[in-house]
Amino acid sequence: MLKLTFFKVMIIGLGLTGMLNATVLVNYKDTSLLKPVNEDDREKSLKAFGTVMEVIKSPRCINCHPTNDIPRQGNVHRLHPFNVNRGEDDHGGLVQKCATCHHKENNGYTNVPGAPHWGLAPKTMGWFGLTDVEIAHALLDKSKNGGRSPADLVKHMSTDSLVLWAWNPGKGRSAPPVPVDEFRKALDEWLETGAHIPDK
Image 1: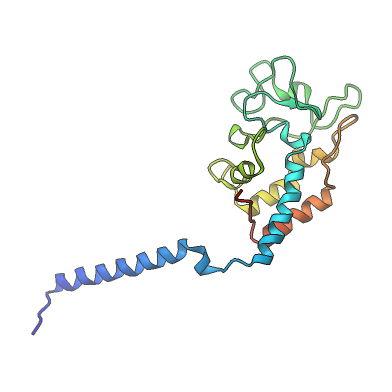
Image 2: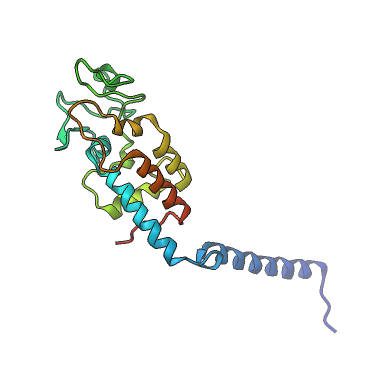
């Protein structure tokens, strides 16, 4: 007759528990086991993301998302004059702070653009020169986007005053090719249909 000591029973129990936990973890990581991908939703999601990308890649947005330390200007993405750079906090150097010229609203007299917390996006969110796929992956990478979930991204892009400035850029500057209401609608649809991004 098999005799099991208390310690042997504990070891066997712990082993079984570990096997069960491992199974749960495998299933949790395999999202296809939790929620099958709906191809119709995926197609809608990618279409909506394409609309979002039209805005992201427009000069009003991407000029302040450089992959280096120099902001860009205008529809032709020219480098900012006067050797302006991002500085340590993305808001300019020691004697060239963005807020020195860029105030909380557009200046109708000098035509210098302005909006609250004017500055560059963090360097980890530099998009200029990247492909759509590279931008998409950076956008969803929490190690690059400030720890934001897809829902956080939608909220940020729908409500942030600096983002919304793009549709009120001041004289001589073109707004993004997608109206702001359509942009918000596309963001919501992208999120609701699974927040898919292109893989190639």
